[in-house]
Length: 164
Image (cartoon, rainbow, N blue to C red; front, side, top):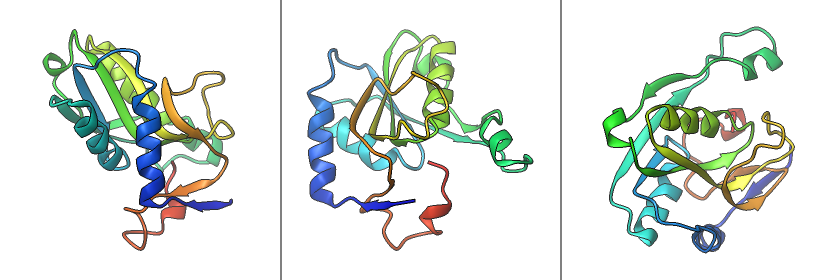
């Protein structure tokens, strides 16, 4: 798979491209850890959103076969109390929509808690999307590459192993 290294200047351009797309204000933001932390913080600062929450979701790797692994049910490690999002317009932020599992799982849980969610990512990969014609509500760019952001360079485990 082709890798694309994104410099900070491009991240700033992507954030600027997202901000002009929003057709209404948001009452809250749910940032998906870990990938959404940096873009979520940048968006929250630029948009003046102060009600910022996090969601940590994992998909079990203990399932046989690559395809069945992608269809595993999400496990929420952390999620805001429903009273923090009920009745609010919530922007759900992650870095990349690859398979779409993380953003979709969080969006559905926000909706079930009474929030009105919209999904937002820097990059959308339509070639890996598991949800047919469903795509993020807001995205700055489409790609078929494995994206490496500046905050990921030479840190942590090999980023190629991450299921984005």
